[in-house]
Length: 115
Image (cartoon, rainbow, N blue to C red; front, side, top):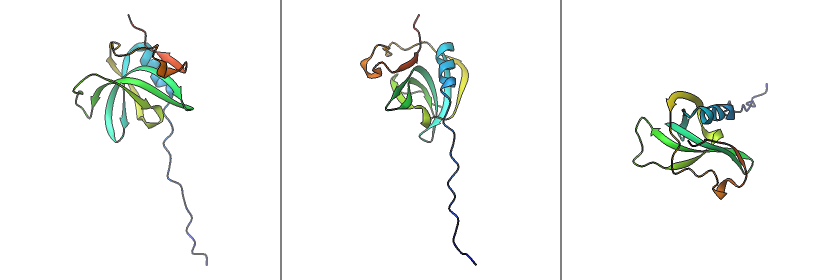
């Protein structure tokens, strides 16, 4: 009789599709997801690549149902946004966002348009 246990890997959550972010940027609609075990509502301004990973720069509209103390543009790894989905909530592009910022290093995939 063989008593060895079979190791099973934990089920992996598929990486979110960047298509949701592209749609949200074009339509200027917020997205919602779980990020670092908290619920976030984000206004995505830029989707770009860095170190062969996809990131978004977004303004946090809400974190766990509460607005932030101050507006700021944060960077989020797309793979970390669990349950990513678009919302009907619209947003106005932030004055904090600079699509020409050198941090994007020519790796921008799409940015929100102002105006």
